[in-house]
Length: 113
Length: 113
Image 1 (cartoon, each protein chain N blue to C red):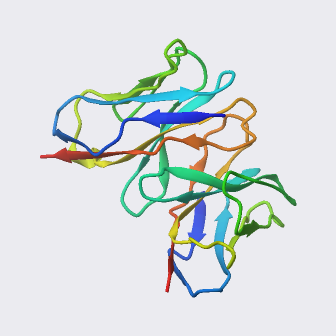
Image 2: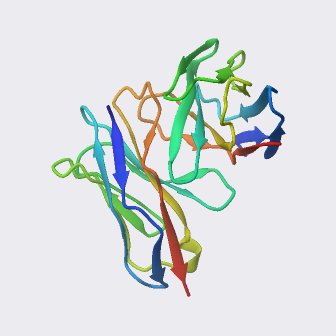
């Protein structure tokens, strides 16, 4: 079956530090890949996506590249802010997408001023 | 503005009682989904629906039921058969089920009295 593994948190960084949150996946075929962000007490917001190998998704300074050879979709940001503190979820949707999204367990990111 | 509305935001259930969580969307999306979120476990798919009057079980459907009588609405009933219902419930929708990003509501937090 499909699965997503992402680094366990919490991840604590100082403001302006470089961020990497690792995400690897297992899926048949060529899934679409997503990063979602969740702020306290809220639903999930789509952060970025990539639908095929070597695609780079980007939004709000965050980037992730679809690496088929390593089955990875690591999230990066060059300089984090306190407002980036949230829980980040990596997710995949298999081709056809009939069974919804498969999520990782989430990574809690804490940015200290 | 278009979006997904979940209500209520907080819900309390007594032992042996069924409760229904509301999810309405005005995005004209065909597909709708229900997820359950528990601390440290990410999101798990309960039910999903691709078109009106049709729905499918997800990974953890036991103790839950849904209906899809209208395109805009996808209510979830947590029955008394669900022995551990305390969780954060998230509804989502997408244009189709195929590789389109899902848009999420703000969630309903269900607790047992």
